[in-house]
Image (cartoon, rainbow, N blue to C red):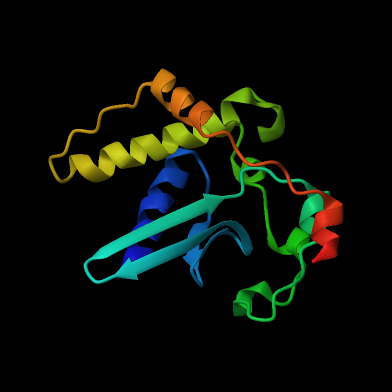
Length: 160
């Protein structure tokens, strides 16, 4: 099953990053009882796509305007978004010698991505596949070619 595999894969990545108590729960990735990532799949015949969105950081004000969904996993316990969600940066432990993850640059997104890359190498090395690292310049050029859409304003969110 795709979800079980992805849960095992990201558990390995989180362990590489020093995150404890990471699990797949009701199709969400959680640390303890708070959600740090969500998933979606599209399956058609013999083709499938799975993606995960990790909440590395977010704006409390924007998160607070989201409504609690009618359909929700039992473990959510009807909590609002700010009580149910957790920033991934907050659950990553600091590197040795750092006071807190928030003050530790090595606990930033690059550390998380390095842990995921390490998990990819481990996962596919077991199958005899060599994984090459993408060139940073190529990735930046790709992102710059397709700039992100603008940020939705609070007014637009309240209008819906």
